[in-house]
Image 1 (tube, rainbow, N blue to C red):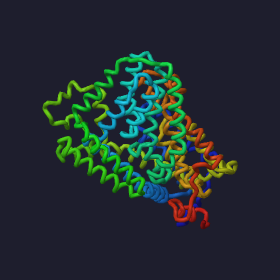
Image 2 (image 1 turned 120 degrees about the vertical axis):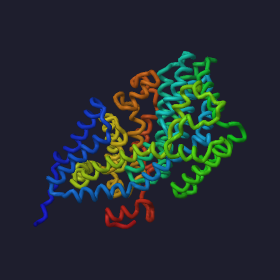
Image 3 (image 1 turned 180 degrees about the horizontal axis):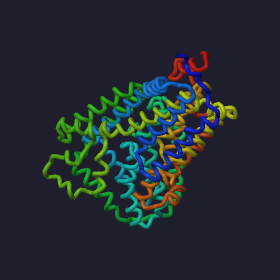
Image 4 (image 1 turned 90 degrees about the horizontal axis):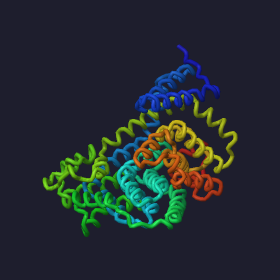
Length: 490
């Protein structure tokens, strides 16, 4: 029995699975609220049928999916370890301590810029933009309203600060997903983002200071005080214990600077956090283990003197998170996304589309510009970051390597054009959440969320100037892939 001849798809046929994806995701998410993983599997099934029409077998599709998952598996392991670490950091009091530090720096005279800085601290230390906006962000909006501050400006500052952490924190699922999609080391990805994020951070601070410099008030901050008091009642955060609570994040920073393996460093940080939780916070090892597995729960407080019913309502939303199981949804998302991307790769759709695009792309600046433009367009159309990461990562990864560019350039551009742009899309889940939580429409707060669009601007500028662009070097992370794709040695 002869082997069926394999055909190369035409441009129209290559684009068809992407059109189907847009229709399926938009219809399923917006109209019927179907879980996106099911929708991705539908897209994968359609594309697999296309593969078979073109002459490929299921085994070839399966092998491609497995190969992509194998390359992504170390990053998925990191993602799951992040969930474990968050659970450990909460039960130890580390995250509550960082939150209290952030809240205590609020200056009513500069409510806009301090709202930005507080949510930056909280989102970086917790890795969740929604958690930062839904807890401290909501409290800050109440404070701003009581002061008579301009609410769109405060909301924009909160969104920008919240997504600073979603972009830069190793605890963030979007940061991990961007690294997974582009095949980049997590900490090298984060380090590379400083080139585009620091300028945006500085510009944001300047804008918020200027905007609020004429605004001064001694308004009430009782809602923020309630959160601080609740956290200090639930955990031992007093000095010098507070310095001990900073040891777990210091281990992460030190491990990153010393370029030590990510997972062992995270495990050491988590182990130290567990010891602190038992020695300082009085939790049992079984409680710590439960927090690391399933996330922290308010009922884990065993002290009968603690009145959980009267704790500030924002506190449970802040603390009840983490755990390895919390990351399984994102891991499953990666699996379903790679099923679709793997089938696209086998069919040759990505090669056909990319070859047509690349005919007009001659410089690094143009390559980064088209990557960023597609990121903004796709996240605007479908409003789902994880899918956009996986699609563009699969589309552009090999092209960046062929051109001698490290994949961390790609992962950074994905973050700059997807992660921080998502909350500016009114119909995205992020946009809907921010609007409902902060009480300000997306259109009103978007002009003030400076950090959410400066990243794209600086990514393009650095692409054309060459500043902050990492080239592949002999022995570097992407060197072997470069040799394999180009047949050349540096």
